[in-house]
Image (cartoon, rainbow, N blue to C red; front, side, top):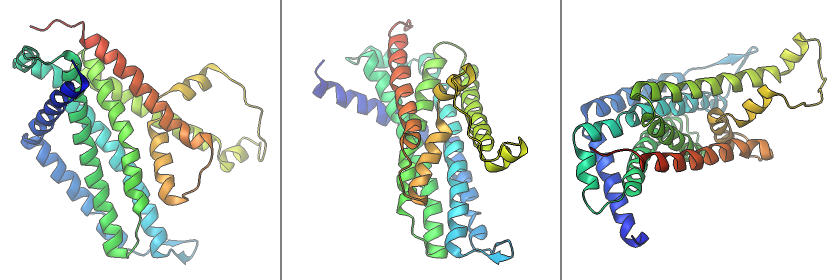
Length: 282
């Protein structure tokens, strides 16, 4: 099938997937609850904060609170994306949608591509709207304009693509709940590892170990290799948020998390297409 004829079918499936999720009342209630929680941050922006006996200026307060909100929203939407993806294939198989769709002139790769695009697009929209609320609160309440904040949100969309593809792939190999918990475990382990690495490289940690200012020669160990190759979900968030913070480029270390996740998306996506091509359609 020519690409010009295949793409409309992919986008039709993507549109159906997105609209099908939007019709569920649970999704609407979940979005309304998340938006309400973000709106409650408005009171924090209006407060006065003191550090070392000095009051912080409005811009410092806004950037600190917005950074915290950014990470919470990005992590929370990844969990929601996993929840949306975990039962897609099993639900379509059980209600006959899968057999109906594939009985038409639609290939398996078109079906899978449409599902990925639909779930990813919905998750990106969910996250962007929540980040947009934070952006509007900062601008309207404290007159702090942060255009890079929304750009950082779009960069974090690669994390959502990773979650969608990983959950869809694992849902073909194990139960839906186990697939969700497995991806959740990967994310939590990555966040914990990044936190430990950040603390171990801090000046306070070096002083506690009696090695202030000492930079030991790096040596490649099994744990360091695993840490280097592990999905850098938090690293993508940190690199993205630094755009509207310092706005400066800090070398390969700032770009690597994004490259890491993109490579994972390509590899896991290829495995997903191969695995789905081998399943029996009843």
